[in-house]
Image (cartoon, rainbow, N blue to C red):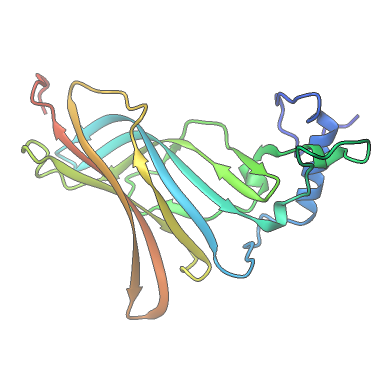
Length: 238
C-alpha cells in the first residue's frame, strides 16, 4: 500500500485508532481545508497564545539582547478540519473509520496556520522541535514549537534590585483583528532551568489592541514579559 503523504511517520496508535482510521480522518480533514485560505467561520479566527519559559541562555548588556529557549503555544479552531466521532455510549459495527479517531498529528505546513510572529527578534527564531500540530475532531489545532529566541531588550536596570523587564511582542504579520483576534493564556516557568547568572523575578502577559491613524481596524498585540536581574551571587563578569 502506498504511503499516505499526510500520515506522520512513527505515530503510535491504539487498536481502535488504527492506521486506516487515522488515514480516513486525515482524508476527511484535507478535503475541506486549504492551507492558503483563512478559515473564517462567522467571525475572526481566535488564536490563544501562551508561553512556557525553559531557559535564559544569554543576557548581553552591551548589545541590549536576551536569548531564551521557550515553547510558544498556539491554539485555534478551524471548523473545516472537524470530523464526526463516536461517543462513549456509541458502539456497533456502523461506527468505524474516522469516527473512531479523536485527534491526529500532522505537519503544520499541511494546515492553515496563523501568521503570528515575534515583532522584536534580533534573528529568526530557531525551531528546536518537530513541526507537528495536533488536530482534534472538533477542529481545534494545537501547535507548540520549542524555539531559541533572541530579542531586543532595554537592560539599563538589569543590575538594579528591580531588574529589567524584557518583553516579547507577537502579532499577525498581515491580518488585522477583524480577521485574527488574539487571546493570551499567560506566560509560565514550570520547567524553568535556573542559571546561577540570572534571577527570574517574575513573568506576566497581556494583549494590547493598537489602532493607527491610517486605519480603522484593530491590531491586537500579545506581550510576554520577563522580569530578570543579574544574580546577586553571580561571580561572572559582564
